[in-house]
Each structure stands twice: as structure tokens, then as C-alpha cells.
Length: 48
Image 1 (spheres, rainbow, N blue to C red):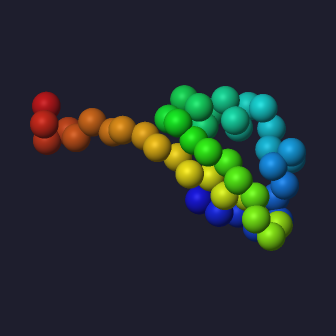
Image 2: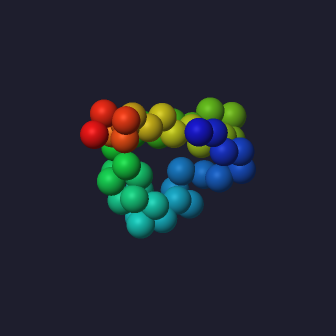
């Protein structure tokens, strides 16, 4: 996910906490954009 115009230090602690509940993530910045790479696993309902 990439967002332009949002600085990393403007993201609230609650947002970082919520991202941690989704899965592992890495945040990086480049040319005024914040990029989030999120790795998560989701159970397939067809396997149940």
C-alpha cells in the first residue's frame, strides 16, 4: 500500500498497533510517499 502526502511520523500509534494485529509489516518512505508492505495469512473457508 502506498500513500502520498502522509509522513511516517503522522501515523498514530493506534494505526501501527492495528497493522501489527494484521501481520508483519515494513514501512518505508520515498519521495514523500509512505509505503507499507504487509504480510498476513488468511484461512481459506473452503478448507474448513
